[in-house]
Length: 293
Image (cartoon, rainbow, N blue to C red):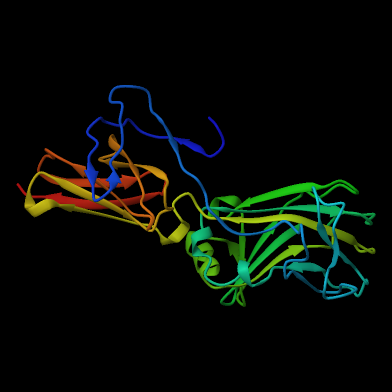
């Protein structure tokens, strides 16, 4: 499977056009199709023209990172230097990465690190996401080698191994923790210190991506039209101009393309009486509808 694609369930050929929304082409009876979706870039910094508002906290030599127009991965980069005061040193993200970033739930945070002057890489912590009294911590033994750019990518959901810490203690982050912090993000910190000695660390290519269905913003609703055998399923708050599968009872599916507002609609006809479950598998969303007898 190609990156950026997901396999989906069986899709049927009964596409319809509703208010300019394509209820997509389908291939009943064939193998499961490949469903394409594109994640949106919420915020990014490639440091091609400057430090892009990033700053440093902890014990850096200067709160303003050095900007280097060369030596990045590729192009420009920012660099911070440790003054060894016994606290950790961090790259701190500017305003465009902060605030309500609920769309990033299910997406990812990626960046490149260059460790230039460290004799020991024993620190496991890589990222802090802080919001409304909760700190989400990502720790990994995948430490950067010396004098070589090292790429990191962390998924922004509870399956990635984030830890949630507050005034009470620590625990494995839940879906609710992830969404709560991302919705109230006050700080995004990337580790710039990996040893007890003097660290010189560079950062490049920071990218915050949305989830495949615009994170925690997306919603799915289903209704049985006028109590009849026609079920209307609506997807809202998804990525604009993206393709998704909408299914009824897990198998009967159509492809839909969202409009500029991230909305799409699927219509299922000749539905049997009783309870049915609509779903958008790529978004992890479901909705229950009951049609009359």
